[in-house]
Amino acid sequence: FKGEDRTRAKPNQVEKQAQQRLYNLMKKTQDGIFVYDAEFTDRDSSETEKKNKPDLLGIRFDKKGNPTHIVFIEVKSKKDSLWGTSGFQKHNEGMQDYIRKPQKIEARINEAGEIMQAYKELGLKGLSNNTNKFKFENLPAEIMFVFTDDLITKDRQSTINCLKVLKE
Figure 1 (cartoon, rainbow, N blue to C red):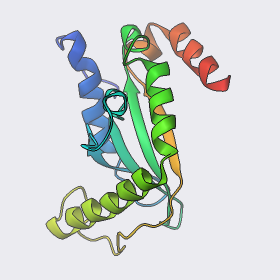
Figure 2 (figure 1 turned 60 degrees about the horizontal axis):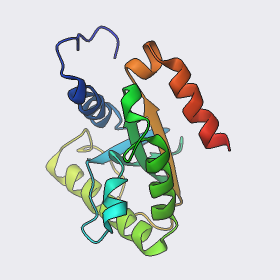
Figure 3 (figure 1 turned 45 degrees about the vertical axis):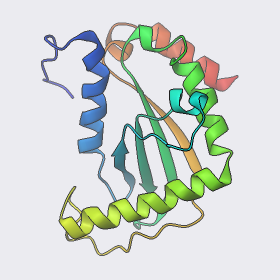
Figure 4 (figure 1 turned 120 degrees about the vertical axis):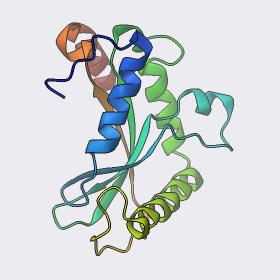
């Protein structure tokens, strides 16, 4: 995201802008991640699950274009987004709980295939010439945290502290 001027963005918009950039950029169906949904909410989730919902959902593909994981992505951009009720640790705990529910993961995997197939049929997100049939089964879940903006330029120690929490 080098060269972008976000100095005029309101503090609460920085993270949303980072999410939108990732949504638009992460569209690899070979050796990468294809983000297919932003601001996902499971209407059947508990209030705790809703508070700890991921910012983005994606499918990870290997070098041959085979799906390997469904990916739950959380974006953190500012120091104050790391702690508290919707902070890093709470999101990690909430998403860990969510991915331990096979029926939830199976539903997300089915939705991923339907959404990506619709993108293909509508010629969206660069999938119009893709020959894959987007029907996914039995994909393990992966949680990914993406640190952007202040957390990599101004406040690296907070990011390092978060990584230490994950190691524990």
